Image 1 (cartoon, rainbow, N blue to C red):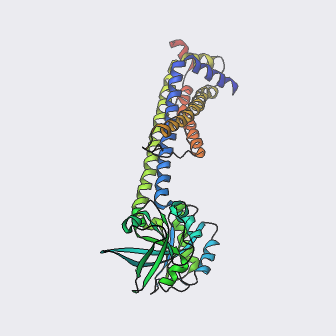
Image 2 (image 1 turned 180 degrees about the vertical axis):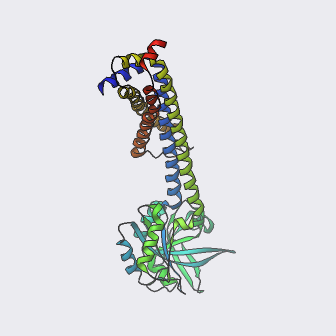
Image 3 (image 1 turned 135 degrees about the vertical axis):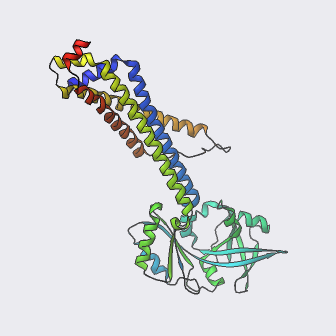
Length: 386
């Protein structure tokens, strides 16, 4: 194998301009693959993070008359033992209420939570920009928009009217910003015991919320949870069922990314195959002489396979370098007014390695065409015709 490799290398070096052009073409193809793939993956991760990253991906609710879940601790224990697919579990006791301020009436949702547990899903603590989380009974934190509407300050009391008509006062201990205006305007977060008392839930909750390890397998995990609970009164929802349009958009992005990469690969394969096919004609006299000297057809064909391999290796390495450099430039110059990247590119080295290996394999496959063409060369005719 050393002889065909040396001959292949000599052929490539004898046509440096042509070789450089092929290598550059492969490098551009690999760099485009890496950049487009990283860009689309980054868009997906950003979209998922902003939509479901800080929200429950599976929710258990009740179809019972009072819409409450009893024995929730037993249920959460079962869920936590489900093959480590569920990473965070929190409970909530929600109830509707009204706030009357002057002539205005605001409809709010009082959300009773164990803040330590719910913080792992909603990142509540990091989003409290003033004050602190509610610790004691009849304490609450409210969103930025609701604060502006009511004009309240830390330590003020807000009087609410529960769905049973009772008047209750809640002390404001902090203000949060969940980056969603509708939630900031409607949620009043309290300790779990406060909400249970306000709405007469007793030792019940209205929902069990969780996040899973693989968000794209949330439907499978939800089905497994429903199976182990085996309770007709409990309804297990997942984000994929509730966000069909978002899921369709993510699938569309995946398909477009795959299509772009396929077209890039096809162009790389055709480019290499066409140039190496011409090389067979250009080097036919040399191949004929080598065959006349005793080189076998198989050895001659390996010359072109090694050419494809060398071109693929060099082009793939340069393509990875170009792709990472292009990604770096994008992250440094495509910025928002705040100075952050417009899209955080997702650089996954596994994807980069696979892209390089696919390009390498494509180069070798493309070399099969001229390799087969070299088998048909008759050394006597080639030498005779020059």
